[in-house]
Length: 280
Image (cartoon, rainbow, N blue to C red; front, side, top):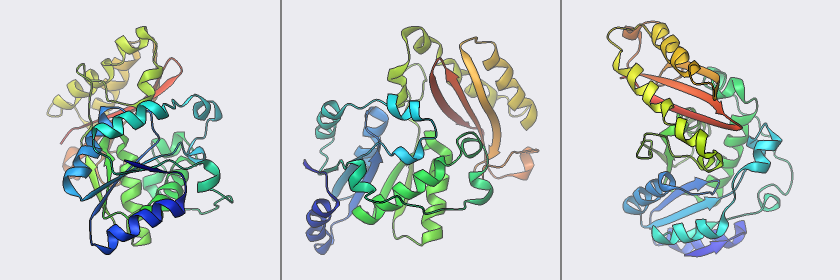
């Protein structure tokens, strides 16, 4: 694995491979890698000639400075894990390398960016869009791989690619869970032991709710999840939403949409967790 901290260095290394018409699979991350990330990488490696991974904690997508400060950074462990998936190139730039000057680009994702995470984390998706656009410009991948745990982020990036007419295929990948059902996340390592023991209830409640689709209306399902989560004192709920799987707008009647997903965001102690479960 070759590691680059500069844009020019990575571009110089990738250009000869493009000239040979080798395909590039790209997995952007913020580090603190776990098996969920590694599954994305294994798939990217299997479907492309070259695997490029970026590790960059993007400051402009954090609307909470404390969250940015506490985000786990484990460069040595990350490098070891990347070796286990046969990563070809690691791009690990500094903030100064990525943003020599402030980037004031502003993207309007319409209703897609106004609900759920868009409502609770103002500016978050604009920061995501800026860094993803930059990373795509730098790596010029054939395919880029994103996990469905961040379902809304995935939808935003798909919209970004359409808006900018970028020639990259976005490949959605299923949520990877711990054996007890907790969605894998870099933030999980910040959970205290007691918090970690109750965290699986999130998925358990979502899964049970989705199984009740034939007896609950969308609003009844949303309220069911809210009420069940509220029974756990350690949870502080931001939102529970039942939304369509395209524009992520609230569902009023099941027969109005082709697919629906139930979403939740909550704090467990000081750690904010998100999860989702497809209903149909």
